[in-house]
Length: 601
Image 1 (cartoon, rainbow, N blue to C red):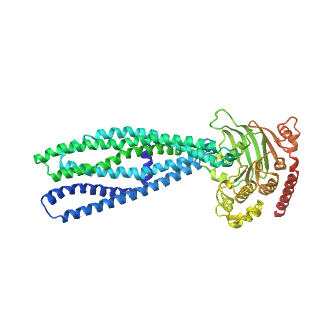
Image 2 (image 1 turned 120 degrees about the vertical axis):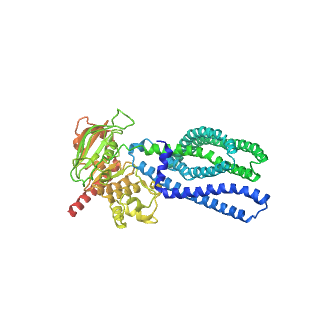
């Protein structure tokens, strides 16, 4: 479907606003034609016949008042309509992007996505509020002026209209050119946004490697590409006004030649001909605006194409019709012959025939070399991706048969790369748990060993932590993430290398918090350090996407030439000498947590 009619559908709920704007435009166009008509009695009756000026002066004042009133309300209502439409489109676009699967974001950079929300939607706003308003308002002005021309002299009006085909053809031809060039301009804008967003996000690495000049050069290249593309748009648009002026000049010259003969023959009075010329001149501004309207509409069409291109993309992870609410998890999770491959790599499978059963309350450690498929496996449980074949069953129910909201409500995730938001500490802990009280937030922070450092902050729990939590340390960020998971209180827990980036001291505090977090929960733990998986009920060993070994630590070490044993020998799983204290602290925390659980029973 053409993007512009589809775009205008967003305005249909606001029919009353459009009707009011249209009425104001009719008043504006009629008042404009009336002003041109009043020139005839000014010349014939007032200047030549010396009749009373009062009526004419009053009529001029009323005409200008109505023109101003129509212009104000038509502009105000159309601008308001444009803002309403752009708000709906922008909100829908943002929500639609958020609803996409992880694969959508893996294939696209943040900068171009933001460019569609900001730049492309901005072009749409101009189309709805300004361009379509100008199209309707100036078209009505033209209708009034043309009606006046035919009222005075049909032949003379037809003579002036002979230039119309010469106007329409270049408008259509230039419009197509503008649409094509605008599309490239918006792509260049998106690339420039991407370069800037990437440099800002990685500013510490840029500075550490002295790469400011390199990044600046990349941005300048993208900026110059945008400049060249915009210059092409400007060149095309700049051709339209002088072309319109030339054609308008031809029409006026023809009118003067023919009109002078009509006046000489007595078929037209001087006032009628002057009024005719005034109506013709009044047509110049609308025609000039309309010459730009088509170009602006083509720019908006290019932007709309990019917006609808995203809106028409449907997430790879969909809820089935009739999906049910997942009851609270109580029994077991089963991976049955699970195979998975990314869509952009057809024929290549990251996981092959995975069969794992996890009972409620168990802690399962998932280990393997880099690229073995560990993170992919746990990402299938909350349906960040869907299995290519096989099933994942929660208490016997295929997770594809339940609603995404009810499934993800029962899963908490703590990753190595902690994701925090530019909000207060309290806001980050309560993220995903609306309505949490300050007492509940503090209790979760205490359980995560985070309360002491939070209380030491200048504003305590109301302290802003900056984008991605850059104002606090890595260990502190990790403990806030654990507090967030504790507050959510989900029965299922995924820990993806949650302590891999921490030093020994920070890891000690985080491990104690993790022990509290895993208590009475079913946990999937991806880790390579022994203290993290020491008490695992089972260790799942992945190799090239397959489960090659399952068992406890000592059992797997006893397998001759086993994958787990080799990883241990290569020190990918071996406890470091300086982490003995950490291991002891971990075991002590585990024992304390077990005693606390026993007392609570």
